[in-house]
Length: 593
Image (tube, rainbow, N blue to C red; front, side, top):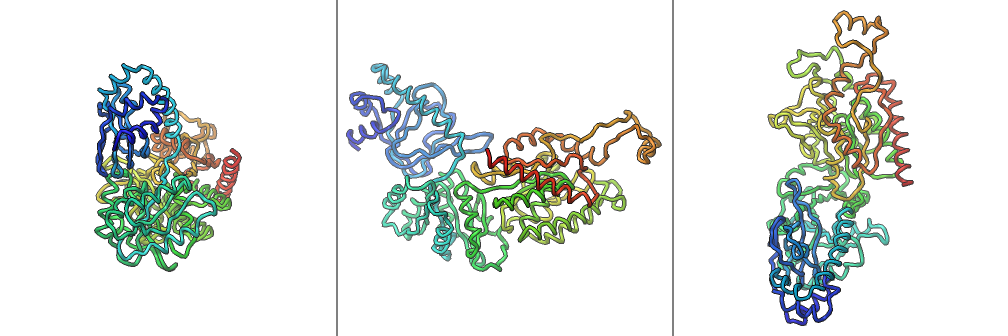
């Protein structure tokens, strides 16, 4: 690279845009050329190095570590600079910078630059003006959801033909939409492949392209260039990732900082997802999708995940108040809002599981009614047991879950699903997105002391509502930074039992009998089970409030007057209607905003 090329690169760099030609020529004499291999790290967050770098060729990825979790901030492409803040200040590196592809950089050593700006003080002022402007732009950018522009489609093995998948996804696109699908992957070489992809840079927000080529170098380049990878497997055929695919995944995971998605294709509508776990055990996948080739709605759902418009529904716990969620779901469906993923806690975990399996709303309603009848039979004096681990047996409700859900595995559900329980053995919240559906839902709804905890791998799991009664944060992890979350909270964004009570601080057995027989009308006492449950949920109040705020659409049915364990079935229709009306109003308000 000669001085003229270096001059042109510096002049095109935004931060040096206000320098005159003489200053750029002087700066060009200071730079050193360095090369980075894919996956190699330029600098780590917290480093005190103060050199700056201009990307001459290739692509870097910037990430930050927060709460022991790495988050990708964005990509750095040719013409952009890295480390200008460290160059101008004594602050440590704020980001970790890694080479996503082979990259050529122009390094500006701090010591040389220090003398340069002291000889030409106006240079520093010009650069500071640009840095301030860029910082403002960066803050604005970070407030927006992160989205991926280049999305690579990688076959799981040699037996997978992704051409049909590419054709189907193209047909499912909205005309003039923001997703562009390239169906010709016959690139001459790696350079021509990247050149072609770059030519589409300004033509669409999302560029989907197949990674199929007989040349290893081209395959590696296409894989590394993808900001998001989707691996395509065929259900019913070989359920193994090829060694080549595994190697490509290993390479890209070292540079992309996010795991790929898995798509399993089904050629026939009567094929039932089975043994998905054998796929998931082979690599670390971010999400997985079951897609039927002859089902356009499946492809439309996948496109929504690709372009960041997927909708996730979160159902809170609330016992019998859960009927309000059933009504709210009816309103959501009537508004033609697709539910692309669903999750819940406690009673919400059961309702979410029923919805994920149901073929239509009528079946969903019928199954909710069946399980509700059986569950309420568990809350009975006839189901009292010696209080060794709980006061009730939970037998009818558990049997109903086992009957309706059978051996259904969560990972085999047609929709992404999760539920939350609390592991009191390890003292941590557990997200169930794999394993037996009935067991996970039963664990998520195991009210401590009332119903027996569920034993999973030797650990005790109780109702997830004690730690997180509206897991919007979990859905956000599933959808990523983009996408819309609808949350149904069966209590206001605080946990409290309703009503004004009046009774003395001490009560004898005889007094409580008189009160229950309504022979002490001046006293008003709360329901024991409700008070117990509200007390359990009190510890999750702050999390509940945060998740209420984090939801894009929050639905709060006015069901405070109904007990959590309400056994009057005649009121279930009223509760359902309240949920329906609350959802209609919330959706209307959101549309008008």
